[in-house]
Image (cartoon, rainbow, N blue to C red; front, side):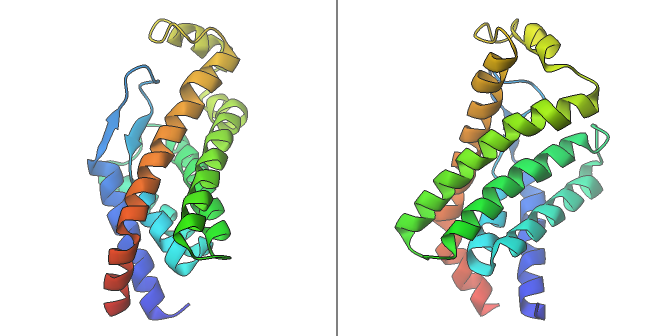
Length: 191
C-alpha cells in the first residue's frame, strides 16, 4: 500500500469518526441505544475507490477516533456491534462494485450491502451483542414493547426494530456516499 493511499484512508477514517461523534440522532420507535448516523459513507467511498480492505480500515479508524473523543459507554460492545454491521455494508457493497464500476452496479451493490448489514445486525445482536451485555432478547423485547407496541417477542423485535433501523441507516449512508463519491474521488486524486 502506497503512502498516498494510506493518507486517503486516514483522512476518510477521520471524517467518518467526526461524523459518528457529531452527527447522530435517535429515531422514535427504535431502541434508545441505536443512533442514526452517516459515518459509513466515507468508508463506502473508500471501499468503492480503493477496495473493500480500504473501506474496512476506514471503519477501524472511525471507531478509534470515536474512542479517543468519547471513550466507550458500552465496554466496547457497542463498538464491536458497529464494526460488525458497518463492515457488512462496506465490504459487501465495495466487493460487488469493484467487478463493474457503473452507477447501476453501485446502486445494486449498495442495496445488497444494506440487506447484508440488516441481516447481520439481527444475527449478531441475537447471538453476540445481547449475550455480551448479559441481556436476553426475549426479556428486552417484552420491556421494549412498552415503547413500541408492535414488538411482542424476539422475532418481532428483530423484524420491527433491528432490521428496519439498519435498513434506514444503511440507506442514508448509501445515499450520501453515492452523492459524494465523484467529487470526493476527484479531490482525493488531486491530493
